[in-house]
Image (tube, rainbow, N blue to C red):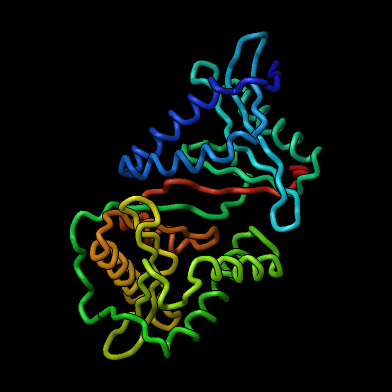
Length: 304
């Protein structure tokens, strides 16, 4: 029988958790300095997690970590970790632990439960909707540009319309992924853009691009350099709807990779929102590894 005991001292679990994170990030191709920074970020919130030891007939079989926090005015739960030791895997402890975590969070008022996967979880979280993926690729040499496609700096005259469009697209991505309501997504969009680019086009460390083909604008790009050590984060590499299906998605990625190298970084990282299967397939074919995958489910869980 699977049983759970809340730990007063979770240091042993934390050491194992950090070791597994380090291995996962390293296998995904991230550099040592980037891995260390991501581990620092992970450590920042661990102290607030509730960690339980999972046992079976008095034998420890794994750990689970959970937390409930306010997320844009609504309580949301999170499974920070769910680990069953290999010796005890496949004996039903995984499902029992998932169910325990859902009940624990629901009892504390959570209406949604999130999890961030850094390792394959099999079918355990198949019922959870994919909200987004963090992807990255090491860029070792300048990519081959697509014939006829050029990238140039965005002009001040082009920036206001781009900003309006980009904020609207961001809201749409959040809502389509099921992460927030439309109203909550608008508030998050306003807050995030104000924080990320407070000086607009002149915000240091950012590159804003316009992609053109045959003298016509076909898309835009927005990249933040030094997001992590030697990592450029692609906030947006966008091809207009009427120009899709022509290989310009690869051209936008090539422009992003060129900007990454020009800024002195060696890895391009970005988030693809859930529901965008076309983009996910494109990034997979281009060699962008999934670093983390965010999933969630509404609570209480609907009956199967």
